Every structure is written in C-alpha cells, then in structure tokens.
Length: 310
Ligand code: NAP
Image (cartoon, rainbow, N blue to C red; front, side, top):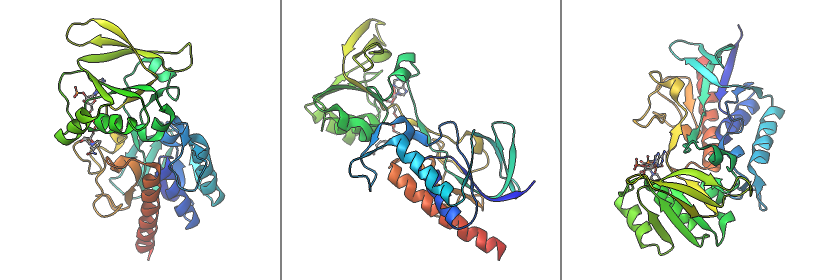
C-alpha cells in the first residue's frame, strides 16, 4: 500500500484550508470528507462574516469554492467518514467507513464539532427555515421577530443576548428552573428587557412544516407534564456542541468534554498528528478562525515532514 504524506480528516473551513496549504506545498493531501462534506457551514444559509464577500455568500457555495480551490493544487478527496485511526505506529492507518484503509505519514484532524439537536422530526425539517444552532450566523435574518432560544448554559445566554440586537422578543426556554450559565452571563440576560424566560419547559415539537417556516413550538412542562403551544418565528438551539473525537479516544489527549488538546500550537501529543478547527476550539467556533487554524496546522505539518525526512 502506498503511504500518503498527509491525510486531512474533515472538510469544513479548517480541513479545506489545510488541504489548500498542503496541496500548494506539493504534499498531495487526501481529504476524508466526513458525514457532512463542507462541515457545519453547509447547514447555514447566507454567510456574511467571512471576509472577502461584501454581499455575503451562501454557506454551501463558500465550501464548494474552498474545495475546488484546494483541488486545483492537487488535493484529493474521499467521501465517507474516518471510522477508525491507528496512531500507535507509523505510518498511521486510517480506515474510511469501516472498509478502505490508508496509510499516511501525517494527519491533520479537522473533524469539527456538531451542534446538539433536540432530535425532533420537525426540527430537522425546519433547519434553515427558522431553526438554527448559530445565532451569529443566522440572527440577522430575524429582525423584529419573536424568537425562542433553548438551553440554560452560557451559550444560550450569549445567543439570546446577541439575538436581541435584531429580534423583537427573545424567550429562553429551559428544562429546569435554574440556569447552568455563569453568574455574569445570567445577569446580563436577566437585565435585558427584550429577554423573557420560560422555566421547566421542554420543546416536544416544532410547528411550521406546512408553512415552510417556524410558526411556534409545542412545549411540555417538565414538572406537571402539561402541554402548551408557544408562538414564535424562530428557534435557536443552544444546548451544547459535541466535538467529533470518538475515534481518537485513548490515542489523542482530550479535555474532559472531549475536545482535542494541542500541546504546542497545532501539534498534538502524537508527533505527526496535528489539529485544527472546532474540534479543538470551544470558544470561537467561527469559519474564519477554523480556516486560520487549518492554515497553521498545514504549515506545522509541512515543517514536521521536512524535518522527518531531512
Ligand atoms: P452547556 O454548558 O453544556 O449547557 C447546555 C444547556 O443546554 C444546559 O442548560 C442543558 O440543560 C441544556 N440542554 C442540554 N441538552 C438539552 C436537551 N436535550 N433539551 C433541553 N435542554 C438541553 O453548553 P454551552 O452553553 O454550549 O457551553 C459549553 C461550554 O462553553 C461551557 O463550559 C460554557 O461555559 C462555555 N461557553 C462560554 C461562553 C463565554 O464565556 N462567553 C460562551 C458560550 C459557551 P441542563 O442545565 O438542565 O443540563
């Protein structure tokens, strides 16, 4: 089996920027695209905060452009998910979808993080039609609308507070009567006149599939079990993200939530394995920061390969 120079796991902004840089360094990277080729941006509509697009760009179009740009310099793609990696000996082995295996001298992990969803059928049908997991991405489209934010952590407080810049009212729907968010974030939300709270409520359905746009929620009281309807134009989920690191457990150093811990810039605890994007970033989680870290990982990887072969 031929041994690749570098494989990139993930095809969001981090993975595709790493692909572009390693391709231009003549390393002929192989990108394993993952379950969601293009990553989380393919789930959004218009992206207005990626520099260079004064009129905005649709998320899927931006990702296709990044993919084509890296391909132009020789990046190759394999569809499917990296289902197994063996980092215990070099060259490393990567298995895609439990079948095809590849060997590679270096790996850039850019498998991202996935927003947690409630898991409701109509929620998924209305993603991009009023249901969103990213206020920074989609808040702007809800000027003077009534919105619901689900969650009781820092993300929910932050997203709700951010959404009040646009929305008429924002209602935080939380399944308990106590927030998990830090005191300072709670206070900011409590003091915001545009924010209301609905306590002890679980969203059990999302209305609006027939209309093609969210029209409201079906709520269940977690104490009494009573159900009620709540009218709103948008639903923002802020119930956490899950880093896509299952296959690295026991091999790469992860923090207690599961994010990969870089030990020096983009180097991980395994020499030859680099990390970029949301899979190591709990804080910024932006396309542009992911792209920047993909560039850094590619440059670190290139230097490491050079030193290995010297
Ligand atoms: P989080 O702290 O895990 O909070 C998730 C919230 O969603 C919890 O209130 C939880 O309810 C609720 N939840 C989870 N699953 C749910 C479900 N199926 N249905 C309804 N509600 C559900 O996540 P996060 O807010 O994204 O924060 C993650 C980490 O990032 C935290 O460490 C946070 O401090 C940090 N963060 C920091 C900032 C900042 O400092 N600016 C901003 C954002 C995030 P329960 O409380 O009942 O479990």
